[in-house]
Length: 390
Image (cartoon, rainbow, N blue to C red; front, side, top):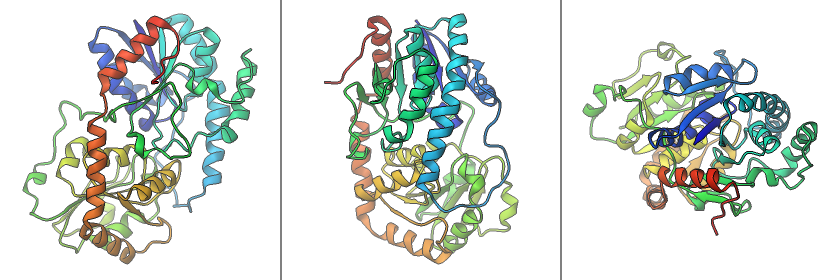
């Protein structure tokens, strides 16, 4: 079976697809990926054929100031960027690509609307992989109008209820209890264990991790996009907690120089990158921007969080974490170093946060894994009809 994996955006949209693609390749299926040109090197490095679709571009390496969280601005990015511009651009590119490569099934991330439109135009079954954990970000009132405009341009009937998004199969790699209660999963959705990307074979933890003192270890990350638009947030957090009796591990991304933060005490380690799957088992608390990958990865290891949402779906994740009692939310713009310090002390000294996170971990471990996801995709390719979970 030929499986074409499509994604729009960067690593946060690409990496959730990788475990399924690897399982498919190991099972003997022919697998290829398609994404924007700037992501093709990452596709090739992962060992897959990569077809560039869409225009070059991305997030760039420039640093940008920290902006106040604005839900309306994030909705506009989703509506005009993903549902209008990227959907039209990628639909055209995918139709051309599919005519040449001829996949049996398209598997795409949940906001790669262009892949879905191309699949509907070509009569191909398709599965979408959820990458936004709360379920409250992609809403009809935000994306229906531009998506229907694109659909009509390709000769498809209007779809005001967005049935396209759940037509055949949805793979939801998140615990059901995490999802926003106002946005239940559709009938074609199947919950799975989070498909957390394994560390590359050559990757290893720095040797100093094994020698850390016997005290709480905190991990601080602002992701791979928002790290560059965080203003002085890294500095505020580090300065607020570095003199506590903790081990602090900070990853800042490849575009930022650790030297810019100056000398640090021995208990603070600032690195460009450490694989989270290797690091999480050594941690007691995660401080993050609230991206779906970081939050769900933390919960998969039973770790509570302190969340500093800045954009995208991060505010929604913060609300879910508060509802579940697995962490506290801090305003990224207005918080001071002292604010961070006090919240860290409170979360570390309040067992209920850890206990709630461990309950989520247990729920995650009870879900079916990537092999189940592959069986569903194989069934979709063979039967070419919706696969319901009821």
